[in-house]
Length: 309
Image (cartoon, rainbow, N blue to C red; front, side):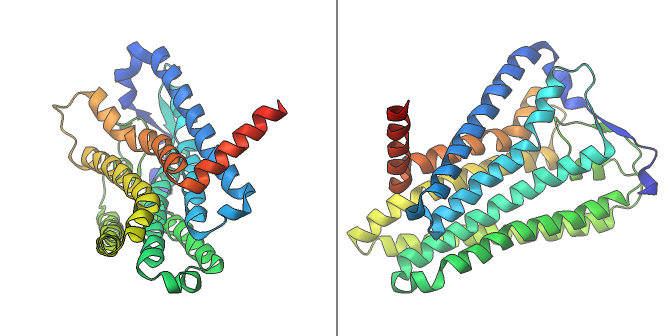
């Protein structure tokens, strides 16, 4: 940490493109964050309060929504404050903390989606063994691992980043990320590069496991009408969410690694934050509308609430 003592704060230069629209953007940000809190919070409460929804697939959906609240909490409050501020800075410690939350949020997201793909594979391709393979206890262990592994990975990444000697203070984004901090180092970043490559390879394998599961699911779904109906009802929302997160993640990676100076800052800003904007709103809507048990339970809760009022 002593190597970085000369850098106290980082300047988030991505906000230079927002100066003329700060009030409008602040209003949209506040609205988006409120929608995220309401949608994900409603889905979480619905699953927790209804014992019939405490099955592996719904436990995964619940954790997906909890992760949305976790990740967006690391971005939206600071982002909203900076929109109304004349000085867009973040402390060194705050930068590492924000990077930790946003990166671990993304990693947890992919692992939970991979777990959901495996759950659907067992449910449709091996239905007779489903309850023994995907017991509630085993699901709980897998969910804990899907959180624990990314959190531990990111602790190592932060330790490696904290040992770097930082010679710059300008981060060309709306938030902090570890790769942006590493690019400001004036010493060797070989250890960071190797570890970053390891993380990329790990999550490529995780992401490849999802379409691999779906290839088996599609083959199984073609065999009978019952399998096709089950695939449409429970797998389609998961597939839509995976594609949603994958596209958003690719945009951010392309911007971080290959951002061109010819691209306007506004476009760069959108590419950088859309994975924190679109998936947290669309995912609970997709699951709330398509999964029959969740949809019917939420309808009954709304009717009960309206009758009591």
